[in-house]
Length: 270
Image (tube, rainbow, N blue to C red; front, side, top):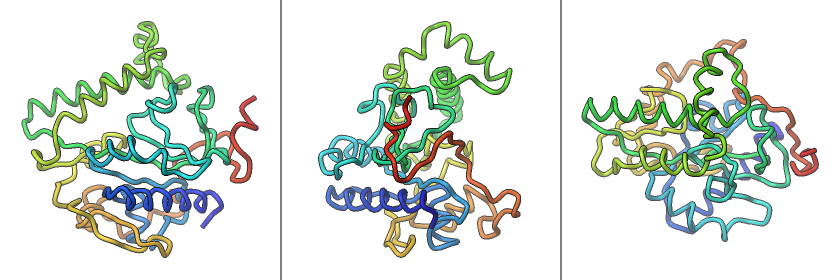
């Protein structure tokens, strides 16, 4: 493991042990599920760790976990960090630094983190699906308007109306409305489960039985939970998941200004 992955792995163990104390279920998802199955841990060139929880368990974790976390470990979401602008949570190590380019201007906790995603149901009606996609796109652009300036002309023009309407200053209200939109389909009543916090598009609409109750697999020697039908989950998300990408594409997908596993982010804020 790299030094960054070691900090993320330590955060994951804290997360998993807290879930066990609270009797809550979780899954390694996205590239972390792929790494667990194909590499027995991190994808060697990966720079993050992702976990997902059914919405009911996620809400309980948000409410009950903070008092159980060790000193210096911070559960970040729009409830706990007012300028935070994502629909999911991050578990951060406040004694480290990971200042990403897109959020370097925000007054938030910038410690190294793992992502904690809520998993929601997805409507079966084609009309409801189209309306949900429209609502989500609206709130995504509203939230993006509060990040650093877009690198594309299209992005700049799309964000301009939201900036003029003052959305960058209405973060919590926007996230609350967005969350109410994506969480209105209970998983027990749907056939598909979606992680709305990622960017996989329609590939992220996963049959509920693929998640199931989860199964245990070794992740860097630690017994971690992944979707129950891990192979079909990975096939849906990645296609040919067994074949690694060519060397030129073996790189992480996060871009940071500062990464320091030894010093707290507060030493870099100025």
